[in-house]
Length: 409
Image (cartoon, rainbow, N blue to C red; front, side, top):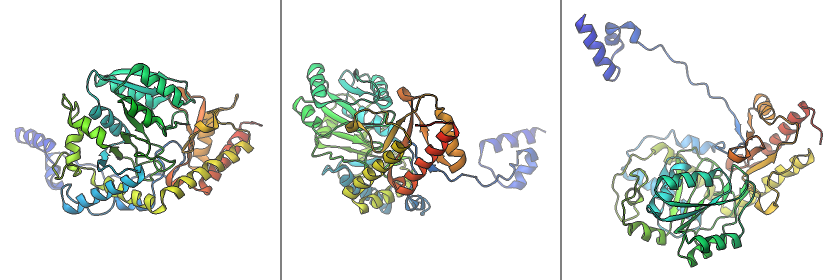
């Protein structure tokens, strides 16, 4: 009896051995055969993730390499090169952060700023609010520049705030996906540079979907996500910092407070400093997929890519307007082409319409998030999904779903 108890304890602490040995210990320990995963096919027209390009998905099935093997380091170099084009930068400090956009957000804040320094945050949606929370956790003095969801900041407002508060950094979200707003970035960098302030920009849902020019617009730090307009799965997030931001990182008086996001260490894994050293095991299959998605994106070219997203944005609103739906964002210049917010009409059950689309078409129509919860639907028109067939299906689902509720424009 004592032998059986001891053997069971060993087996629980070790990897499964042969079925015969496990049966000797206890037949109840033998797992039943599991069925193959059943994952439904869905058209993801919400705020993200969007459907990945088939080539990007197929890349994840390529043979595993070691995270320091030369062929894998070459793939990392290719990712860096593609990102220089997409970010429109000559900076050598490009990489993919291992993790989702939140991890890249944290890397942006943690490396450029030190405890006690001040950050001015454009807080007009959930992502600004999250940056406020994250910055506070790193001991920064946070000044929230608040605006109602659905509104953006003028250059005059930003310049006045920077001069008043004298922050070390200004954070703006180019595409606030919770509210469906697109913030003007061009012109902001000149303001921050003139006031000895860093400009940090979130492009998680906009990179590849709308124009972005890091060098021309004097952006110091920018990050994005792979799972939206770039048509990759989530898990590896584009990142860039310029020479000015790198000098700030290298001259820090305090150690970066997070090991996982320390770009002094991560940068050395990516070859920023002339060598290569181990920091962590990169998500190898995710990097394969991101590399392939970036190659597809760059093959199309930025100008055609931006034009395709704009055309699908216009097609969507043409169809929605014909059935009486209206944008949540009042100012046309502030509307985000990549993630559209549609005002839920009075008397209409928003979640019921989303459920109708999912049940009938396996089509995702998302509701609001944060300050827009219960007020809007959100439709993503990004990357592989930004094509007429998908946009027209969205309009059809809205038309039929509204008719099912007796709505008339």
